[in-house]
Length: 312
Image (cartoon, rainbow, N blue to C red):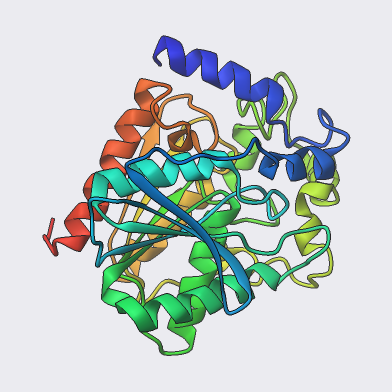
């Protein structure tokens, strides 16, 4: 791990804590993730805010481009945090690297809105963008809860017999609302954001976590194994090619790896980039460390290959 990677990982373990034993006010602290200073885009970029079918959205593109390709970004934040400046900065990286226009969905979140509000919003935006640009010109990208939402959106499209996006990028997707994957146990002492150093993840701790406010958005869901809630329990026939990133010490590691295995087993294609000892959703850190830069080069390369229709 690089020096900057170590610093960032330690920093994230202090300010981004989603473990109920270490953070007694997850709902408030996570909600604050979307509150930022006013954003000013660089002069060479165009950043707009608007609504699509009543859903708050933003777009980001390089002014010199006249994009025909679209990246639909679904942000993370545990279905509690809203769209913040870190995602606008990340949209700049994606737009600059691919020439695409990036649409960001500021979907409804908890505590005011519960499942399936975010899916309803993402579905409305998808309907608009696919009608305007064509499904074959759209790639979906989501991190953490946004990775969950991306996979659920694609399951819904598949289940309705509709055309799918060209491809998808899933950054540390949060996909198991039963916290039952094997990495939830073996990485509990290692994950600086969701885990607890020196502690073990037993059934008691699992129960405490499942009752905590990090799952607030799903509090009225009767069956958390529903694939529209926990995509890790879904089936993946007919899925587009997907690129996953995750870290070796994430509790959510098995979410990404299990779904990638299911896609490949179903005759699709999925690849997982797993970086050593990095933190949850580390590519969103942009240019702050070499690991994030390397992951983003791989993400941009995947998107460009799909847009150019180059078979790997």
